[in-house]
Amino acid sequence: MAYDPNNIFAKILGGQIPSVKVYEDDKTFAFMDVMPEADGHVLVIPKEGAENILDLSAAGMAAMMATTQKVAKAVDKALTPDGILLKQYNRAAAGQSVFHVHFHIVPRWEGVPMAPHGKVMVEAAKLEPIAAKIRSEL
Image (cartoon, rainbow, N blue to C red; front, side, top):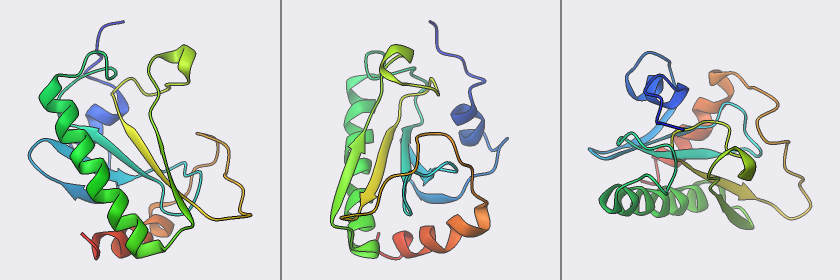
């Protein structure tokens, strides 16, 4: 499948769809997942158009990983979870549902189950206070 420049993440990057921004630099963008598996679930995407890590340039991958680590550290400081889960899917058979490469940063607490992946949408008003806490640690 060829990269679709009209996918939802490309539209978020282009400002056509709103998002709750956590972090941005010249190569990457991090924002709150509107269908979070846990409070503080953040997505990190490269600004480079690539369907998955198999299509992403080495420079794009390096930038995305650096931002993923930076934001994960901020999530850890802001929310003090018991653990941090990083997830990344490549192609539909592996569970990828948005075909713009991205990492999930999901804080985890002992005994607290995760919500189902991509099933329950929450309002930006609920996500913004959590994003503000994470941004304060960047």
